[in-house]
Amino acid sequence: DAGITQSPRHKVTETGTPVTLRCHQTENHRYMYWYRQDPGHGLRLIHYSYGVKDTDKGEVSDGYSVSRSKTEDFLLTLESATSSQTSVYFCAISESSTGSSSAQYFGPGTRLLVL
Amino acid sequence: QQQVKQSPQSLIVQKGGISIINCAYENTAFDYFPWYQQFPGKGPALLIAIRPDVSEKKEGRFTISFNKSAKQFSLHIMDSQPGDSATYFCAASIRYNFNKFYFGSGTKLNVKP
Picture 1 (cartoon, chains in turn cyan, purple):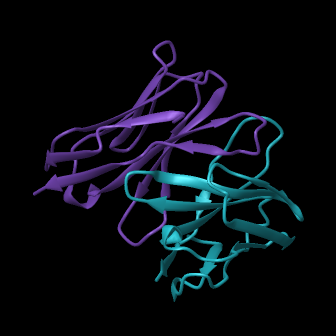
Picture 2 (picture 1 turned 180 degrees about the horizontal axis):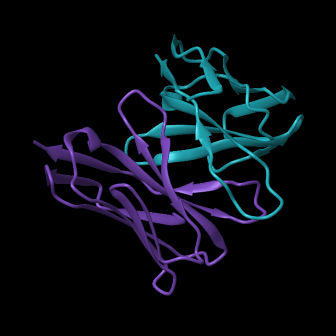
């Protein structure tokens, strides 16, 4: 988890309210990712960023938006939280490379409960 | 469509035994195959990774075996210990694709003392 923090670490919210999760890195890595983790589904990519203000959708992006105004911060917003968005959310970072793929490094996670 | 299929879903091994977790993929454009270890309440941590130009990589008690023709790779944990009890995820990544990973669904390993 070194170099990656997520806030809040735990949150309980009500259906219909907006929620913003923050990922902060001190590694100056170019790529950042948001995943959700649910039993039986492993890790599913929500959105990712390949630079400041450069973002794109992952496989489960409906109901989520992201923003990246600085290299070190990547925000995930649930526009109107639903119970199906109850999950554990992980941020990950990765260095860019000129060719081959490389490792992603994960934050400690945010546990979100939508009532 | 799941890009990486992982099995088994759960595994029980006696202390000192060998734990084997398997993953299969279809996309031959994958160029990086990492394994992650996750303890309850923690984020996944990189354990070991391999590229398709080698058939095996070993780090301590952990070995990845890679079979390019069969499009399969596996994690072997030798001399399994109770401290290895965790969830393990395989993943794969495609070159020039923003380093996006496709994860398997995970294997929960329980090593009994």
